[in-house]
Image (cartoon, rainbow, N blue to C red; front, side, top):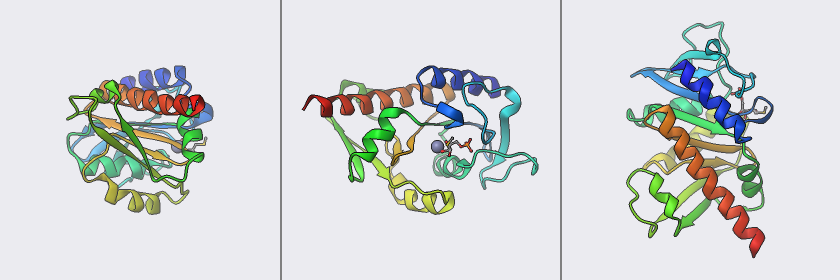
Length: 195
Ligand SMILES: CSC[C@@H](O)[C@@H](O)C(=O)COP(=O)(O)O
Ligand SMILES: [Zn+2]
């Protein structure tokens, strides 16, 4: 699991989604424990020792370890749905900029074939709403603001001026969903440029 997160960190970096130590990556170890990236390290240059075991209460198994500052946002998702096996968070240019040029509280996506990359979607003829939350350095408070929008689970969410959170049943498929979400966000940026 740690090696898988190390590899995905490299792929996120290759996409320029984790500049300057931003982003955080996690995967489920068992029902009540996850492995999550150490805070402040470059996520494109991870080592297996940078993956820290944390309980779903957000506390590191080793109290001297320093897990991601955004650990609670990951734990909230794993607690919501036992089928979630991985959570990835990146800071792409497009998600950061697009969420700052709008006051909207959601990104409405329709007519995109790639929406079929998400579970339960079998046609482009759907409307997917990706919540956009105002950023907050108080992660516990932010998680409380996010909570009501997680039932039912959206296809991901955006923190304004900050980045994207995506999740999936395992690390690889979580990466695919992040890739699909970033693709959709890039399309929305491009459409706005074309107008
Ligand atoms: C380098 S700024 C990014 C951080 O403030 C944060 O948003 C982030 O994504 C990474 O925090 P981290 O504590 O390393 O998981
Ligand atoms: Zn972040």
